[in-house]
Image (tube, rainbow, N blue to C red):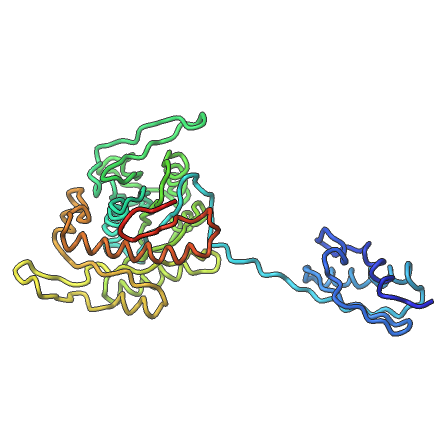
Length: 375
């Protein structure tokens, strides 16, 4: 009796590799069959790399060939494990219906103006025609309710599909939720990470955000529990890192970029913003004094291979705008309004590039940097 490949394949249809639902033939695991008289060589690839799985497949093949094809066949089996790499998933967490893009604004250290940049990015996006929300995730030092001049407001309640939800407070065309709405001005928030994360989850998922093109998340400084909770809870579209030019701030900014680029987080960094880049006194408007160093964040962006989104000068009116709840991006026709508008356009341009790699249902189609979006 001669042995044929058809005979061998017919026999192998009854064998399934450990952990796989289809037979070796159905899953195309049989890569080659060579027959020399009574000598049969079978090359098989399986997805289970364990020695036990390989040995079981080898024994099963030899046994079935002897039983169903030829009892005295000289069977040799070569089993190779090929483990498919899982594609890196840049979309994490639970989607929030109606929210197209979620941008995290972070800094390696405190005091670099991260919240100021967040507020002005949000206002600039709103002025460009986008629907924008801000989540103040800096639970230990919330400030967005102050920067948007809504410190005395309280979120109202509504019912959505039978569930009570918070309605974000709105000003300057931006929807806002912050822990600052629920604490007294002099009350310190002394929570462990788990409690802070739980509070943030309520602000995120127990809120009626409605339709948003952008939800901007103002993260606390550093890299800790809150940051991990955010990337686990939300499908972060991209991150913006804020730094100042001096070396200490840049060293922390490197850690911030590194956190988002870790394999188990893998959130695209849209770029770096340099705050307090230079000082220009009102009496000498043409002069620039680089108090904290020059081009530090720009050079860092080049070194890390991320986009440099722009620089923000050290100007008194920016501080005053934050203190009095009127972000400078609201000031039409001023150099500072243009500064934040340009940074925002650079960010959205990077977002368009990033979204080209996502399914169309995940994308906000931005057709112009100075106008509105088409969804």
